[in-house]
Length: 633
Image (cartoon, rainbow, N blue to C red; front, top):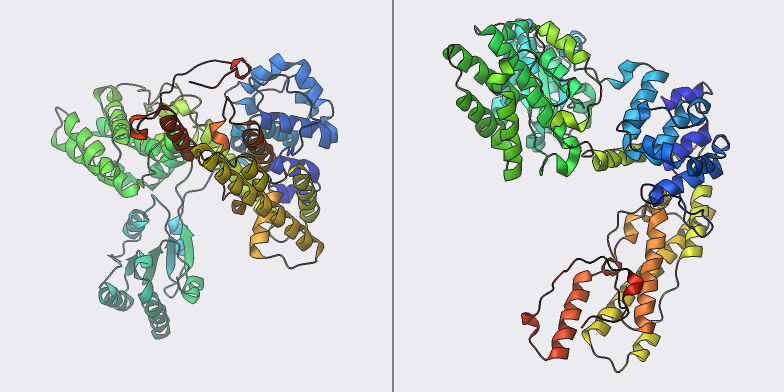
């Protein structure tokens, strides 16, 4: 979308660059004071101050927020701020991209939904709704000498769609799952299909990598001999770098990624359902309502993954075969028991035997059973049964397949957490992670070729970052002086202090050397290695290079990581030259467990007791740091 707008001179490159990177502040000494730290985090305040300083359109934005804090806090607390007007004059003053920048600065978790609105407005809504795979349209473009390749993704199985297409085309088809010892059977199946004119599906080619070279030759031989006109060869494989290139280029490649969102998943299931299958059950009304419940249930299970650890403890690969088996269970039990539905048997087979067979964690089993008890009950057969606490989601009264499809098309593109029975704040952390992934991907695409036509001068930006980092980088601690000052101290705490200083000195010397080498590489004095290229890209994106994280792990952005490092070094300085601090920042050391063990050992020696008899107690207090004047007993 942005490339198209750029070609039409309808995109301010400086504003788009700020949208990608946000406000990065390495030196906060001259930064204005945060007027409301209770809801404006340091990262949000960095974004606001840099937005005011860098973009002409936003001059006065910082002052406006300080003067109308109450209005901005109300906008910040809205569940969907992208649909709310901006406070004050800013709603009429800013265009769509500039409003998107405001959301990126203040409500990062809502960037994805706001981006969807932006793309739909600038291009067309069809560009934000993933189309279902139309296998029939692909088939019409194929010939008997062109194989098909399904690139498999988690939770997707093309076998059902292929079977349905074979029924529509009234043709015979055979399938075999590749693996050890299956090569001769697959070869014979291809030869018979080529001769008799039926479809052949070789599933899971990635499990038979050594045989793929022979498969490539077999396909060439088959094409040279002239196969039957009705013959089609279908392959399915997970992505693998060992797949033969020539065979890959020969194939018509397709992938059916699981669509995102309840709307897209339900619509896909309804689209793949044929009228013949839908109308085969005698208990029409009951079956159709429970069928829609099953569609909703399947979509909810797939989409819970978007909440990360708040959705499932493990990302389970529920797929279409689970749905098809449960749909057959519903049809069979309703036809065999027209008078009284065996609810317990249906719930058990769905929640325990089928979907539950993939679930390994007990809390996830509880979630699964809760959903099944809700969606497969006598209440689900009542008029307008609500599928969540929101009135938007219910089972439609008109139970025809087309009516269900129309209802699914009218559902909102993105759904709130309440649709899953989750708290309204459940998706904040996962949405921020998704936003970060999206922006990182776009940045990588912008600079993939060196930043040529993107308007982003990467070399200059990284050089400025390097200069700022070197200015802020603390000097290594004088290890020899610390050892001399504590020469007579053989306590465990001194050993812990020396180890911490050694680790942090190694980190600072390594970071300083890496920055200086990168500066020489940018200036052309040395060749930039692969490792330095990774450092350069990370600095350009405002992230901490992975090679700098060997001393202690951190998920902070670069703008927060450097001040954090300075605070860690300051604590070590106090400890080394003024004695062990009365209040200690436990997270400021590289190995907190080492410090805790040293404290136990020091206490055991002081009291002349066994260290094994000691343990920590953790009373929670609300003391102010300044009020603590003495060490603990």
